[in-house]
Image (cartoon, rainbow, N blue to C red; front, top):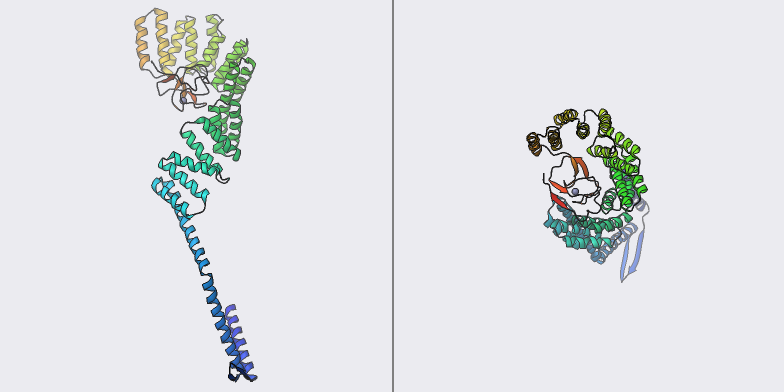
Length: 453
Ligand SMILES: [Zn+2]
């Protein structure tokens, strides 16, 4: 509508001009280059307009010719970039699809076409990794360190390589450098915590773990347990340095953080006992037992009650049993106390109940002990031992990472070096760590022995 009005307005102006010339006729005469020109004013104006039009067209042609090389350069440069980004995209798709050969080809092509080192270096590194060419990948990652915008990615690549090669010292140094660049990256905090813990840097690991929990890289509950394990290691370390008070302090902190965490309650009870506080020690065992009956708690309880008469000990184990009457551990612990006190009937009663609830090697071995002690019946004892040989294994501290079994809880696995990986469960492997009480000393030199069960 507006266009139509505009067009009509233009037509009206032209008509008005033509009419004006028709109403105001006149002549123009001049001499130029020996020609005498005599024409009407309207023709003269028309002639001028034609000449002006020709000049404009000629100027445009001349300018086009003059700018042609630049335009061509611009055109070819944009074509080049387009092809470069296309190669980059194809390369990234190839990396995602695991197509190493195409990824490498596209990385080289993109590198030649684009002046974007941050992007092409990353693709080249990924392509090299896919090809299994770690050396080339490392070269690209190192090159990425030179530029601020790619330094973090370069460090990540080198860190991944170091972890893959099992070089934890190098990995820890790289992780620390990366953390200086980006302090709150969740994956980095989780990795750094793990590396620090594996390196036995307990205090540093505790700080990093806290940051990792805050960043959401480690779930709250898991973080609490890891922290308790770190405090346990600090307690072991204090003990090695002859600092009994500090050893108890850290064990107690672990116990308060996770009251159901058996290694902590066992340790607090044992340290209290060693410190000459058997009452406090038994309180810890009794409280922990109500949460989680466990053979190590029973063992510590026996140590605490070592000076008691066997019958008095049975009475106290009966009290313990009363809190958790349906637990296998409860029956086994009481049966042991009864065996010591030569209360054969009570021992048999609880062993039978344990066997019904969860038959295992340990229960059959105790039944064999009972046969020998009560009747001197070697044949019956042997029959139980035969059953023991084919019975399911008892739970033990088993590494969730490598399956190794350790006789007593440790923060570090002496076989694979994982931290806080020991769970109380039935082992699936016959791999036993000949264990000192804590694995700090055997972390570097794993001593393995095949089980002779
Ligand atoms: Zn392990």
